[in-house]
Image (cartoon, rainbow, N blue to C red; front, top):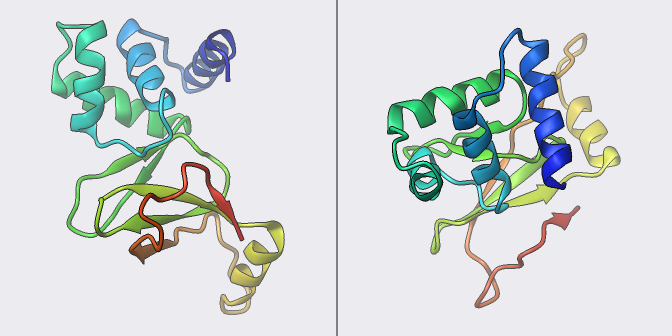
Length: 149
């Protein structure tokens, strides 16, 4: 996604929620989009500090809350760990590498999503699906790209 497209998306989603774009929100959003690595709030704070030295950790948290509320990023909760933030808004799972702590997207095709939804009791319909696989990479270095199942 290019910078202009990213800015337009951010402005549109904020406006739909009755909010306005701020420099802080832009910098935090850009920091999340700059890598597909599911950063924590502290990691995002470290990234944005060079572009905006006066930003506080509290401001980063407030920006993240707004971005989640506007559905620009998703929160990824892993047991007993800091919340991470994911810019991939499509339905997908995550793989958490226990050795490195890295989190990778696992894309789920439509057939898999339908099978998962069919496991629910009758008359239940999911709004979203959250699946996290935990384990270790079989390779020395985990793949940089997402895997589709």
